[in-house]
Length: 533
Ligand SMILES: Nc1ncnc2c1ncn2[C@@H]1O[C@H](COP(=O)(O)OP(=O)(O)O)[C@@H](O)[C@H]1O
Ligand SMILES: O=P(O)(O)OC[C@H]1O[C@](O)(COP(=O)(O)O)[C@@H](O)[C@@H]1O
Ligand SMILES: [Mg+2]
Image 1 (cartoon, rainbow, N blue to C red):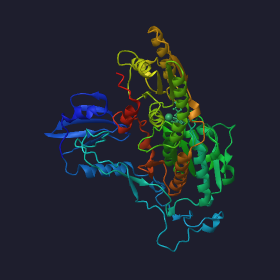
Image 2: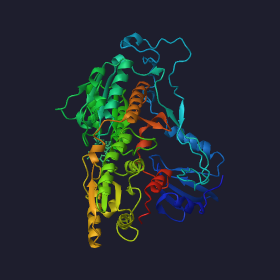
Image 3: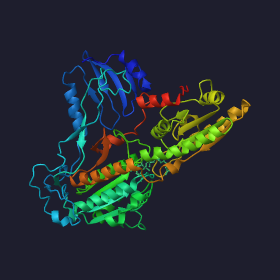
Image 4: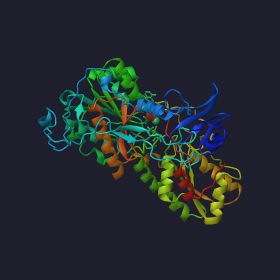
C-alpha cells in the first residue's frame, strides 16, 4: 500500500472538479463526495487524510497501516448503523410481525398474534442483510469517474443495510398512530408514496393514520386539521399529480413540531421531502430521543433534482426527465422550422444538473447542455454564443438546454431566500435569451430565439410507470423500517437494491453531477458541444 505522493495529486486533480489545491492538499468533488485529500509528515511517516465532507469527523487514515482498510470499514459500518428504538428503550421487546408475506386478508386481526408460519422460509429481511454501496473496482485513480479512498484506488467494500419487512416488530399495530407529511416543492409520485404507506400500515393492522396538511406548517397552524387516511381515501390518489396533503416551505421550529407530535400521540412519522425536509426529520428524531419519546421517524427522499447522496435516483426524477422531453421537442420543432432558429429550454435543477443532462441524453435534440457543475462563458472565442453562431452557420438552427442553477456567476445575485432559506436564483434562461439576441444583432445576423420555461410543468404531473414502481417500493419499505424500530433513517435505491440509510449520510450536501463521470462525457459526445471556457 503506497502512501499518498504529490505526484498523484495532479492526476487526481485532472479527474475531479478542483475547488482548491495547494502543494499537499487537494479538495473538490467527485460526484458523490466532496473531498479533501492531503498528505502530511508526522514522526517520519506519511499519512493521508481523506476528509469526506459528509458530516462525520475528519478521519485520518494512515495508509501505511496494514489494517487501514479494516479500520475504514469498521468506521463505515458505524456511520451507516441505523438508529434504533432500543438505543434509548433498551428493554423494548419485539413482537412477531403482523405483516404476513404469504397470505393477504383485509381482516388483519387474524394475524394479531403474529404470522402463523411453520415453515423455515419466511421471506423476511434479516437485520444483518447488507447491500454493496459501490460496485466498481477502479484500477487507477485516473479511471473515469474514479471514487478513491486511498491513493492507489484499491477496492474497499462498503455495505449498507437492506430494506424490507422484518420478522420482529417494535410497535403493536393496534396501538399505533401514524402520520404522513409532505414538505418542500412538489414532485411526481408524492401521492403514490402516501398511498403505499397507508396501504402497508393497514396491512400491518394500523387503524389510526393521519395526514399532516401543508408540510411542517401543518404541525403549528391551528387552522389546519389533520386528515384521516385509509385505503379507501388513498385508493385513486396516484392517478393525479401533486400531494393529497399539500406541501409548503418554511414553518415551525423543531420544538414546536415535537410538541405537536406529543399532543397528537403520534408514534410513527413518515416525512416525504428533500434535503431540507430530511434535516428537519433528523432533528425531530433527535428531539424525540432527547424527550424519550418512542417515535419512529422515517424519511422518503423526494426531489426531482435527484440531489440526494448515494442513491441511484430519487422518485419523480424519471417523470421530470420524461416531461422535459415535451418542452425540448417543442423547442426543437420551433428552432428547426424557423430561419436561423434557436430554442432555449430552462429546466429545474437548483444546484445539480441531472435533469438537464438526462433530458439532453434522452431527447438527442440538444446541441448545448449547461449545468451548474460545469462552468461556462457566454461571450468570447470559446463562449456559448460563438458556438451557437457556428451551429447557425453550419446547420441552420440550435437547441440549448440549461439547468436553472447553471451560470449563476454570470448573473447578479438576488440575495433573496425562500421561506426554507433556499437561495432564490437569478434567471439564467432569460439572461441567455437576452444576450443571444444582443450578440446576433451586433453581428447583423438574424436569429429567431424561442425561449421555453416549462419549470412547473415537469413536476406538477403524475408519476410515470417507472417512478410509480419506485414509489411503491419506497413507501412500503418506509413502513417496514418504522415497524422494525428504526428511526432517523431514510429509504433509497442503491445499485438497484433497496436500502435504509441514516439520514445524515444522505443530506450533508446536495449530490452533484460529476463532470468527470462517464454520463457527462456521454452527454458531451451526444450534443457535440465543446468546453465553453
Ligand atoms: N436545516 C433544516 N433543519 C430543519 N428543518 C429544515 C431545514 N432546512 C429546511 N427545513 C424545513 O424543511 C422543509 C422543506 O425544506 P425545503 O428546503 O423547502 O425543501 P426540500 O426538503 O425539498 O429541500 C421546510 O419546511 C423547511 O423549513
Ligand atoms: O418555486 P418553488 O416551489 O420554490 O420550487 C422551485 C425549486 O423546486 C425544485 O424543484 C426542488 O425543490 P425541492 O428541493 O423542494 O425538491 C428546484 O428544482 C427548484 O429550484
Ligand atoms: Mg432542498
